[in-house]
Amino acid sequence: VTRAYSAAWENKADAVVIRIKQSVAAMSVQPIIRVDTICSIYPDGTIRLECSAQKDREFLTLPRLGLRLFLAPALCDVTYYGIGPHESYIDKCRSGKHGIYLSSVADLHEDYIRPQENGSHTGCDYVRLEGDGLGDDGQGAGFGDGCAGVRNAAGQHHQNGQQKSELLHG
Image (cartoon, rainbow, N blue to C red; front, top):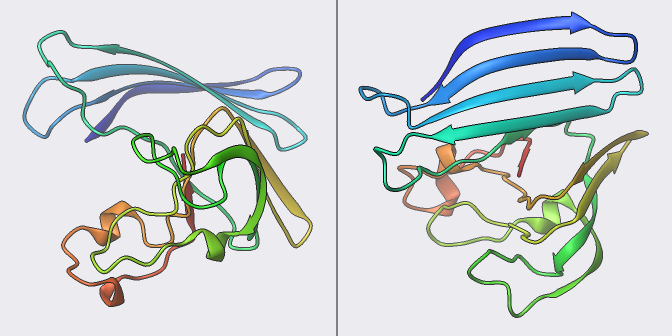
């Protein structure tokens, strides 16, 4: 569960800056991680996201953490500089090569019998999505197609039960 404790924004000369203090916690325990987030939105549409986090020492392991971005369905073409051309995960990337790759979001999807997160690309230095005159860039992250999404896959026993969503995460 993510909890927001405060949020404030200010309109600066070159950007709107949003500051958020939040935490990640299980439903009934103290926060595992406290996060300070600064989101700067520039007139050209660029969004800069900065996060700093402190983990509570009481917890020995971290929960699964990530960032989900919901993007316009028109952003359907992907160019990335990372490990490819097929999907690659941090523990499964030796068969790929680091390079520049072009794909459609639909082609990133890998069908598995059991629904799960798929289409991941780790070790990406750059990712750009384009389509219908729109464009969006990201740097220093991994990403996946997230066509069905991790939450949608939970509880499903076969790929045919999943619903498609327009989601790209990193």
